[in-house]
Image (cartoon, rainbow, N blue to C red; front, side):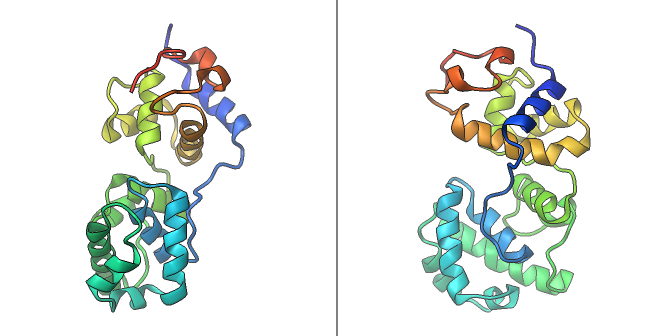
Length: 211
């Protein structure tokens, strides 16, 4: 089966998930950056629970910058890799205050210069806050673009390039959110629900169970 037409995929997902968006809870740009850092290897629901706890005690980037590492680690201990994430959050807060005047930077280049901020985190923040086109190639996006035949590997850089090569920038942000929804609801890593997937008719791997 030939690979699916990218524009048809984007159009169909827009019909199925017209309101797909970032579902992380945040009251301001800094909190969104914190939430995205916390989101690695866990669910948005778990992150939102932790963000609610943080929101009861901390308001504004300066409050984070003054925190002790051990205290923040305890506050976010419900998420995986919390020691590393706590350090990244504190160091990013202090760097943003020192270098950017307390304002979360807007470009992917500036964001990835922050401690603990990789391309996916930067893409989510830049797209959500500033509507700057970027591909947030999380595990769902990586898995789906491989199954669609757009790339041979489940790798963030490959997935990012696959989307960028096939669709113009105005599609990147919305498509990323819609692919994430598709991955959660249908195109799961194990036991994909191909029978109900809106892309099944154009997917080369529909009905094939893999990991």
